[in-house]
Length: 143
Image (tube, rainbow, N blue to C red; front, top):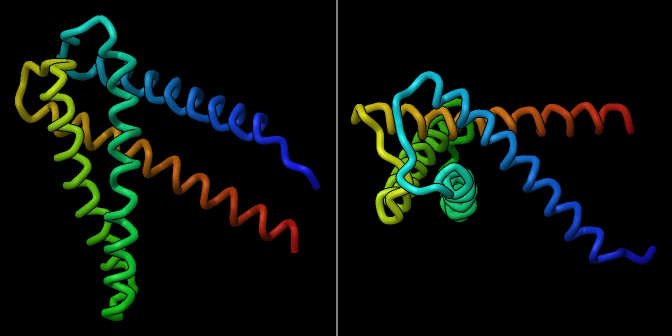
């Protein structure tokens, strides 16, 4: 079966556009709850791209931590909690550094920035769990 590479790139682009659109929706809901303002006109688009880039940067850390805990023999619910906590801390650090470097937006309360980052991380976490659930149902229907 011949694969069409342009079709794969097109699907990936459409998928990323859908993710950015959903993140813009979450960002709009957060703007209703929190008091922050964007410094640039393009800040609303750059922020979801920064969040996606931060998650791409977290991939090696996640693989390293999972393999390290599996090598030690700590494969249980607590190890998953440790991994997700470390990823959340690293995610907040990466996004905070990138946002402060580009001066995308300013929060009017100091702690709201971290709550906003936690909501964005939680959004991606819920999307990953939904994807795992759909994959599990798919495998059950095939067998």
